[in-house]
Image (cartoon, rainbow, N blue to C red; front, top):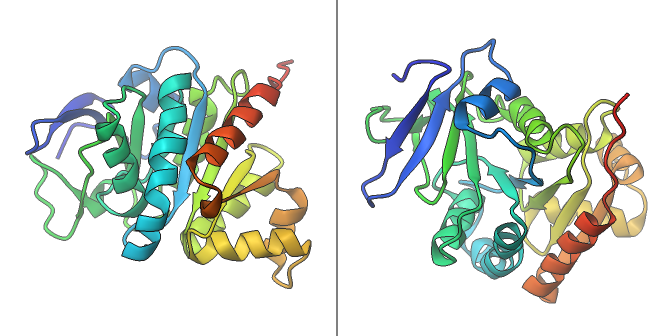
Length: 259
């Protein structure tokens, strides 16, 4: 097991490698950023949604939008991207896109150490990490979702605590993504605008329908569409529309005034 709160390297069989840190329970987002070498604020996007439960059909429908919309934007604008880091669903799509584009934008996977495995850390029941990532933050916890608070705060930290733009992208997703979206769009402390990818399946489509209807019977959905700063991108509109939505948000961004 790696030493806590110290940077180390994860080698992959593909020949690629990534920087990583295993955080102690007391360590925070600022510690993770510092250990991994993020010393200057940069625009940040977190991506939440489908991983192992995302169907092959939804992955195929979404891949082009992820690669030629989201990943291309991140590379051209110097954006850090955060996701779950495992070799499934969204993290796989983002890692593949980063490799195909030969991109250099930071792609940071965040997951509980007990639930993953990689070369040098033998954990037979763990999910493999995706080798298209540049960095990993391995947290305490024994359930997926235990890392959610750290993703929130690391997004905020990397963006300079409101100095530079930060937002979320929802693609597909189940109950964990639903809770994450609720927490990150309705909080009075740290919240982010959210782009919802309509047509990507499951919770993203549920939320898109509620947004267009303007109301929802479920209290959490109603709170999200009332308080959340939501924008919808349909996979039918293609990668250029995703790129345009991201560009519009970043162009309209106004930094938080620190007092």
